[in-house]
Amino acid sequence: MEKQNKLLIGSHVSFNKKDQLLASVQEAISYGANTFMFYTGAPQNTARSPIDDFKTIEAMNWMKANQIDISKVIVHAPYIINLANRKNLEFGVSFLIEELERCSELGMKYLVLHPGSHVGVGVEEGIQNIVEGLNEVLKKYHGNTMILLETMAGKGSEIGSNFHELKQILNGVTYSNRLGICMDTCHLNDAGYDLTDFDQVLEEFNQIIGIDKIHCIHINDSKNTRGSHKDRHENIGFGTIGFDSLIKIIYHEQLATIPKILETPYIEGDYPPYKQEIEMIRNRVFHENLRQEIISFYKETTINK
Image (cartoon, rainbow, N blue to C red; front, top):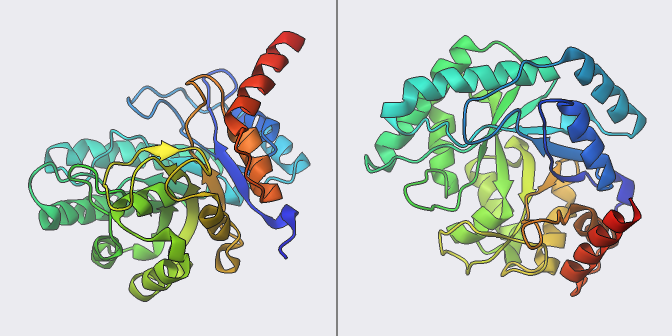
């Protein structure tokens, strides 16, 4: 059995203007995580604060003291970057380069990117736009941060909901050695992949792209039936994928060194589930009363402050 301290498990955390990366690290530690993912600013707009090097150094010291490997920490690119849409291509390229430079300042190795939505021009043209955009980005950005293309649910005109589309992008990019893949379990389910037979899914991915390209996995249950193309995340064990299937993915021996990141919804919109979900995952025991446990925990914490 794999030792618990080898499991790389964390969640999305905040990155605020005041404490920046330090706040992210401290939040992750409060959840019992040994990795995490963050945005360097609001994902819906371009507002960004200058990186505070002193806060970054302090955050790195916290990571070292708490056995968090910075090379396994993940940054997520903002949603407003859409390389598949030519109308926004110039903006997307420019803003993506800015985000990569911020990742370099923070010492981050991986930046997850949604491939984009073609918005009516069709998959093939959308893929060509993405390839053109990534080629332009990688020609101008010379840092060490790798872009991870995320597997998508296929909502609307999203590109990247199947492995062949992602492979087309990789094949078209000149510096494809600087690209990797981030799997998302909810997205895979909603795209039509059967995660109750994850070995088969992983084998298909390996044949088309190669397992060595996977550098992050978003662990989310789904509110939707397989193949619904809706992309609605659910808390671990409460969705259509189910706890047992997710545990098999999390502890899969071929993915042991890959960070797993929770993006599950807050309970009642107010209470982050990550501390309790991480405990549940480490113990490999599903709690049917998880949501009430989370509400009780945070209410009791508030009372005791």
